Length: 531
Image (tube, rainbow, N blue to C red; front, side, top):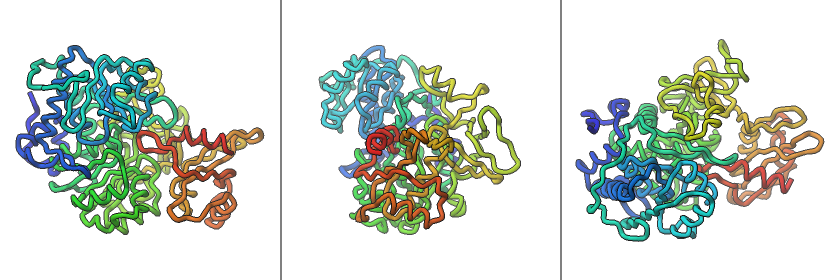
């Protein structure tokens, strides 16, 4: 039986809504506000009734294929992705959601690792037709027995138009909100991605905590420009709008000027954007950010949040910048709120979340108080995933022996419970036996007025093992930047010498991973060839 919709709105008692699936919420909104917009793009609107009908059509299409345990979903970050995810849930089919910017090798790996035998995609992806894509996936070891093409009001199954009213099959299984019903991948920044297990309840709970932290009301308009299949995109574009019953602004491909125009037109109140995206908005030349007069809150993260630019965004828009600290695997461990002071909001990951528990390890030793605790965090609580799908070896590395999820960062937790990331375990540059945190280097270099984006990596060296290289893109209109100019500026800022780069590489475009983060593995490849 479907869970009853609580009498009080989501914003009054968010946790009371966490037993509901997006499928149930979409059905409810389609019945009560059918003509209201669920998703808004630069090209138009998708109503709740249309959302519900498309989900039903995808459900019927999957059921018409017989026994299907998993489907690979490779779609733009628009309403079609969200309707397909709901349709797969209704059909009892595990959805392996793949970022729209993923390459074919990653796509084939995820499809094969998930056991997907159906590919759900659009007519064309990055210049490749759906038919050619399916053939290439098969050539790379994936199994594509059936191809479903969804694009606006078009639905094709194995090349033929599909009329879902003719199909009357029952699902082979009925998902609950605590079942693993969706898989997504790690961003793939450092190697082959792993599939993370997702339940509905973990993300409705995440959205409930975000609602509490941002003090959301019943009339919010959410703009989410984060890749939809990943954790940040799931809670901002898939779960939160359904819980609120309010429209979400989405784009098939992010464009800073277009995003600002869309938010201004529809009076967005809540924005979800990775750091790179909001910084691109700061440099946009179209509709000015001052037009975002309704924006109250921006949730950001996914990578380091530069304080100076976050402060500038707040000054221009009047919106408060909030962030979570966590991962696709853990959900969130800490968060900032609209009531936090500027230092907490802009220089830390916020306080440890009440519903979550955090331990700190230095190797095998747990670090306890009093005082600041520094080391690798392990997390346990309702926002955590069940680990990686079908990968016992990776799960052995992800979990402690007693079931806590380890993150790959080095953090500090102060006596008030505020968490600050100081580096990544796998992102250390070891120069002459000295460990240098790439994250701390990036924090310093990012403050240079000519720098738009930065990635710090180690390049091989016969004497020191590694030397420090920074790869940067320059801000619009900035003068050329040399290594001597950069190190001279760092010296003038009083930065410790160990953070001075020994190589500088200026690129026109930073390599990016499907999840919207900088692709460090590709940056290392560039730096290794040029340094």
